[in-house]
Image (cartoon, rainbow, N blue to C red; front, side):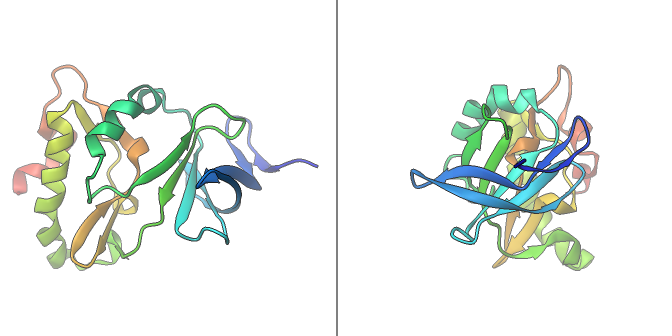
Length: 174
C-alpha cells in the first residue's frame, strides 16, 4: 500500500509523515497544502504541525545549524522543534503550532504597530548574514499583541552587495 496522496513528479504529497515527538514516533496525517509545502497534523500532538517542503532548499539545509543558534530563545520566530533532511519524506520540519490572528485579517491601520517589531527582527537576521525570503501574509501572525514569524525555511543567506532595502523595499517607511 502506497503512502502517496499525490505525485506530480517533482512534488509529492504523502498521506502520513512520521516524526519523533519526545523520542516516540508519531504519524502526522496530511491536512492541506500550499504552492510551496504540504502540511500535516497529528491528533495525539495537536500542538505541532509538520511542514513538508515541496522543493529542496539547500541554502536552508546548509545553514540550519547557524540559523538555529541565531534564533535560540527568540520569542518572535515560532519554534522549530525537529527537522528531517534525510528520510524519504525529507525535507520535513516540525514547528510548534502558531496561535493568533493571521496578518491578512488585521486591520491595515493596526499593522503599523507591528511593523517596528518585524523590522527589528529582520534587521537582526540581516546583521547576522540572513534575510527572510518571500515574506508574506502566510508568514506573519499576531498573538496577544506580539508578532509571530513562521517559516524558518524562508531564512536564506544575503547575497554579495545586497543591502537591507534590497531585501525589504518597504522598510524605509519605518
